[in-house]
Length: 222
Length: 202
Image: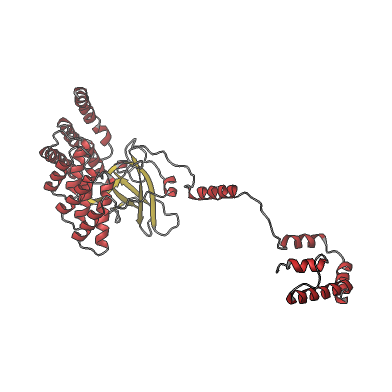
């Protein structure tokens, strides 16, 4: 544990140093130092830095002004801080980067902090990303967030996890598309747990045409 | 064919005691003996003889015609096979039909999955997908419209997890995926589509 902490402290400044080079040519040059400093602040606070770099690159690719890119990166830094605080408040005092990013994504999708905290507290020892997205899926389709969380937590109690939780949300949404009310849909799926349909895998023919995206090696051409 | 009564058989062969048969069998014996006499003295019909001779005198058809006739004449084929072998053959055929078609497959890592992108952009000259998985670089992952119906498709191996993405149409128009179902604000006044990739090796 001490060794990993030492490595983390050693790696954080290195990660911050490499950002300016990655951003060069991909966003307005004048904004790079500001973004770089924000990334270093995040690294200093032991927050994930890659989302900030990605946001700056995204803004550059979308031909957004440097000022707006800086604002977006600042907003994302705040999101990371808020997410970590939310996790800490729910009992996860040393969250992994992916957990912080899961909470950021859930909040961006409109999931309320109380529901997020409830899910985090209920799932102390497993990845929460799928559960958060499953509840966000339900809420996006008109379900009450608390009712959706109840269903997903019931599925977890029945040993479901990961992508299967997304299947549970999809099954409930499908029941509403069949004409059931939201409450009826939740009741139907709850009664079927854990036997909800699995998302079909991609067809063999499609897999053969799959391409692996090439890692970025230089500035974009545009 | 009805089996011949053994007593009648013996009477016809001259082995049994004649005249002791029941009346029904006696009548049957008389008819059979009359038939035997007719067969022994009968002559072939002239019409039959004529047909046989016509066939015999007819010249042999050409070799090609005989071959064609042989090829197209229905014939009974008797296949003698042990039931055990026929069952094994049927099981083999079933197994081959049920197995997935072999083909080159990309080796997927434990934390990788497959994402399929489908979008309808009629009249577009090019469509590509950009996202957090390729540093938002257009033209790196182009979609294809092979049958020119305006529906663009692409399949990509991605790390399992959540990815934000958009489509770039004709190299300049950035649009979210209308079929994504999940969206997040992009902090630049628009929305990104959200993709959740599941690890293929579950």
